[in-house]
Image (cartoon, rainbow, N blue to C red; front, side, top):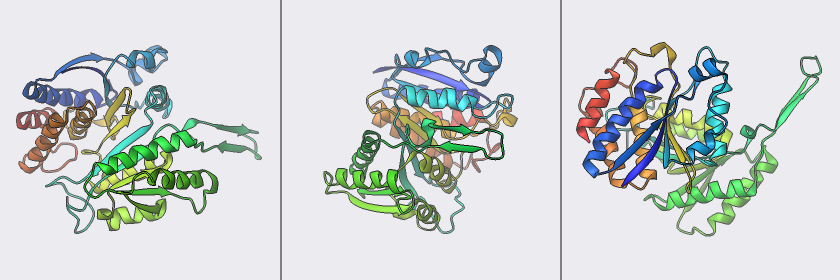
Length: 348
């Protein structure tokens, strides 16, 4: 098979980690006879500083020509926070209707977790985050801005269609896993209207999946259980805002940002895959950043493209690299960036 992949290296250490991700994709492509046609895009902070735009106005249409998008990292110290994120990340997520953010929370062997007495058998679940609604829609505004009586509103928007397709995706995912357990995480005891909709849709769609065990947790309790009893979770489905928060907590329990990857999924369209870490500008060009999260994102991309065996090859190679003793920890400087990519590629 041959796939067209849009590559957005981004800012800071993004280009460095993307090179290693492409290196591993090349190795598994050779093994499995998969061809990749890459096109690189300079979208991000440097482009914004040079031209006043993060990406061109026809960016979404350009991306529709590809099978998937592979993203490094975004964020530039000389660009006000939020500009790149809103224009590039949210622009592509909304424009391409990537309505699922998929975040595996999986502790690999030989990776330290801050959770006492927990191991890989305890931390292995997936968070399905609705990705195009909630407060990220941007509905709201100011009244009397800058005055003592100023009022600011940020409205959480939930549609039945948006909730249902996220919930249904999560049920389908739970069906593919041995434990077949799905947990709805919300705050329906306080957020009465929108989360009442989530509750009703969860139950209605769940009636079509009698094999799935349905569970529920308020988001504050969920955060406690993610620390105390992560083994309770199999698949979690939740709102955009809560998903944004709990997935960073999950990342720390699986060993930190150096291993955590995510997918912004349109099941029938173009999806985007990236590490969840930022651009780490202070490490730019130093060849010290761990690229495993980006390589892991490449594995997720292969799985989305239907290349299940290749995706498993990459994940197995990551595990073998971690077990080799050549990566003592996941922080900066544990192993040179390029050496880590070489190691994983050699183990595919």
